Image (cartoon, rainbow, N blue to C red):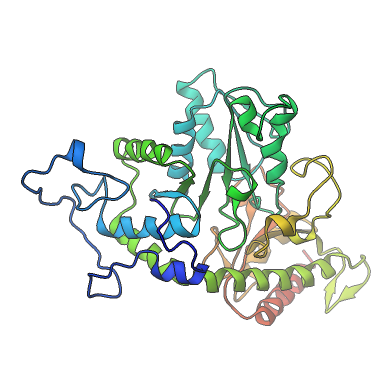
Length: 398
């Protein structure tokens, strides 16, 4: 769905008013549970109906009143044409299906995307997966997840957008120089933390529910038609719940980011305590490493960072992710920690108002069994610090 005319409003105002419908009396949008809608006499669906701005609805797999309002809000705050899906994996699959790449450049990140690529390989035997830092060719799709799951560390979007132009110095921009596309998985970095389009993305995805945002309307219309044919539409109830959640996004995300940074600062201090010493009762060596975007050095290059590194704060001016990871001294400590906390719930997922943590190995066997991922909610920072303090002390002897 296209950005509305009031796109010059601030984020909070857009979240609350981008879908305003002056002729409706109700302030909160209604939920339509109908699967089909009455036809209007004399109306031709093929010539008179625009899915990007439907004047009335035909079938719930196409559009519903609530899905249109949701996509209007998302399109305005994400600065493009937004289309929603029932899950993040459906959105990822839709992007891969649409771009139909010969090769996908991807390194680490969410296991679900790698699983989707394995499924695509069954019917597209010529599809291959390369490393993000390999050289690109015509038809490649660069898939950059930033911040990265599960560590919360950032990748250099401008580097990947510009990388292919080295092969074609006269080209005017980034990976498009070799006919490729850059898709950014921004699940860990929703507004107002970062804007992937500002750094050269062709498409980016956000939210657990699943949304793709593209710059061109014709691309959106093709994605819409694919969604109609594949049936990946989000239900009306889920759309209503997501729209309600979006109304306070600008309040929740910065608060969660600030609290996460406070926890990271404290945990990073704990991780530097030598064995044989203690910090606030936690023996040194219990916590060995903290990974988070704000801890990345500015001028050190490497995989994901570009040859000279980059300033993460410029790519994420609104703050850093609410999710990050810590590495404990051994796997037994990491396995036990989620069950020693009182405020952090032992559960997977991220981004909710409740704080969660998990031994990431339980969800993704490729991860270090000593690694624990944390998703910070809206509890008070000092209470979360106290919770982690007592839990780390409890597992220190394992």
